[in-house]
Length: 357
Image (cartoon, rainbow, N blue to C red; front, side):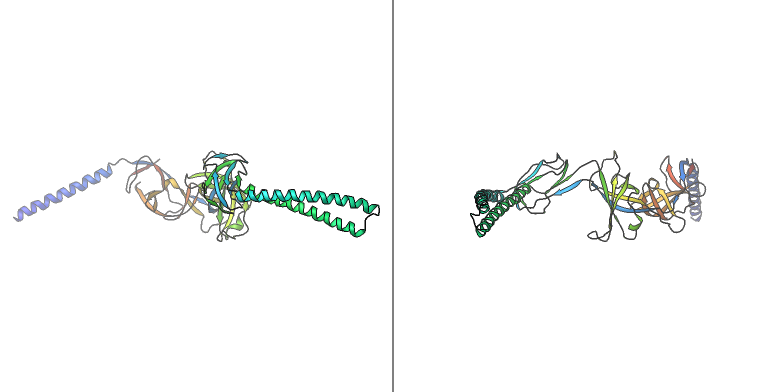
């Protein structure tokens, strides 16, 4: 029995050793993966990154100054319109009635003024011939001036009613595209309530939010790089306006950046990251930057393959910081003098043999 146990134990040991040899032989015989390596780039921190949003340079939210039911909405979202084109009609029955009353008042005031003017001219001649007293002339002059004032007041009332009528027909202040429709036929329109939003496509700008600790380092006219987050595309632009107040902006300063013309399709509301070049020295030896396409992502973890001893690939997890165009800042996990793998001819894994190209 003991001999049988010894034989089994020896056979098992031989089998394990044999398997280990086969495994080592497999690793040893594994074909090396050709890779390209690089060293982290280093910047002197001459960037400030701020979040922003794209909008058209020429845009408007159209509203009315009067209250009334919407008779009709003449446009749809995405429709192109020309300057002066009718967009929304609002019921103006009350104002039309006021206009009729004002027209009647103007007719009455005009007739009264003409009669007063005739009497004034007649008494003026009589007064010149000493046929009318000073008191009679003064009374007639006052009567004439009052009639004239009533006619002017009636005309001003007409202008006010016409202005109100113009608010009942909302027209396009410029040629563009309808980007928003906030009312439908039958809805009640209130003064100041947005009815239609309109913009002119083709020229866009970015409104960026900059903290107060950095706003003094940004000047008008500087060129910036803008990263469109949804498409990961880089654009260029110029700072055209720097806000000097944080009122109604939550403690952030608004910076306006006009984008240069580009073939990239842009839409209002797209989120961006704006990189402002500023004079700013960073502690230690500057930023450590690597390309974003070199990162290995697993969930919320970010890493990069490095080359270890005996030319094997080792996955190194990193803590990353700000984004600068197509590069990211490495806060920890990789030093400035360490090589990392930029690309490989086939899939890498921990311990894979590599050949540096």
